Amino acid sequence: MAKRKVDSVDYSGAYSENNNYSNGFNKPFSYSKRLFSYFKNMKKIQVYLTLFLLLCYSMSSLGQDDYVELTEKEKELFAQQNNPDEEVGETDLEYDIIIMDIGFNRWLNQIAQPKGYYSQSFLEQRNYFYVLEWNRRVLEPRVFDPLLYELQINYEHGIDYGYDVNYQLYNYFIYFQRRFNQRLGPFLPRI
Image 1: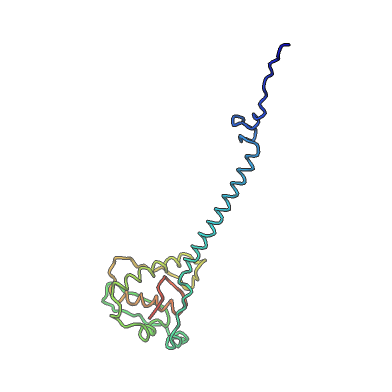
Image 2: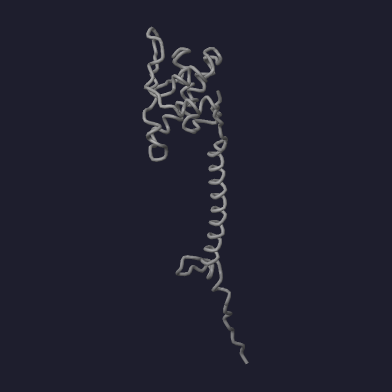
């Protein structure tokens, strides 16, 4: 009897790497595996994104909870209704500052540190940071009260405005932060 040669059938061909299926994947069910791994990676991304956003939020509110207590003298000054203040400054200066906030001149004369207490470099450094934050808030009226932050301050770093202008500007920032309970930077507005 003659033996018949039987072609062997490879049933594993359905799962071989050479087969391409109409769904574009090599193996059946690999789509669901890839989808599962995609969602697994998305969960990791969501966790990392959440942690990143929490970190950003905590850094943005860092130091914002510090409350500055007002002295009794300041409370009295802030509660009084004052006449508009006169201009403060000398007329022979190259640069002059005009602050149109009722009560600032009285606060400057009665509560603020006297002239000469701070060095000019200290005042220039603080004013630079305060002006940057002030101007940023002026440009974002939907986020910050536009009645508090009305106009930008034209203060350029590296220009010598003199001690008097820097002294008045710095003390205005301190006055403003204490009076309206605002924070313009990481520094506490201390007297």
